[in-house]
Amino acid sequence: MILTSVHDLQMPPRRVVSLVPSQTELLWFLGLENEVAGITKFCVYPREWLEKKTIIGGTKNIHLDRVKGLDPDLVIANKEENVKEQVEALAEHYPVWVTDINDLEEALGMIRDVGQLTNRRIKAEQLAAAINQSFSEIEKIASLINTAYLIWRKPLMAVGANTFIHDMLLRCGFHNIFGSRSRYFNITVEDLRQLNCQLLLLSSEPYPFKDLHIQELQVLLPGTKIMLVDGELFSWYGSRLLQSPKYFSRLIAEIKI
Image (cartoon, rainbow, N blue to C red; front, side, top):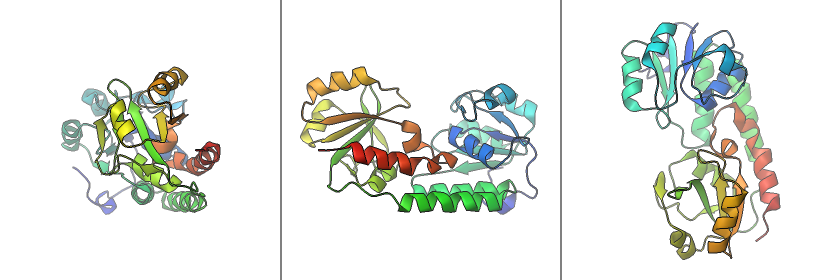
């Protein structure tokens, strides 16, 4: 069953399977060590859970038999990160909570919902309030800078509107030059030139951009400032958001264009 309300779950779950890395870390933050039974191989925080918990596959290749062996009373999934058909297959047997996160407000709502579902409402409310306060203290970059954020190399892929990363860029004061486009898409270096990209951010995930990629692109874009950024702090929407505002403030302080 796909849960449509936090009230659809009659009792706090005793066996939880998480299909989403950032939400797995949230479950740990909320103190659900004993309740979480299964996670994906990409759920790297907390690191000790990779050894303690049953690994049920990747975010897009769930081993349904392993989930069945855990007999969960709650599966937590995400619309973007998981495969619809696999989530629906799980929902035939288990209660499934599917999140859809495109901005900070939705992330805070998700945190509160997970707290309600898992009987950790007060701690979740406190976490959401702390994150919201920290984001309100970000001093946005002083001048409008034409910015692009890349998530993949071959082909080059950028982020547009209707994404969590786009909302994080806006909260830093960056102007996403691909903000008129939706979701994720292929681009070319020529696109970056034509849109006067002044700041190019290369993410650490899902593609692990390195310094050598800065050097490659700098030759093609000599007038553009190119930087590596922590993809987790731009795209993870659970308890890791506590760390994002300070990181964004340091990043903004480094940028001089």
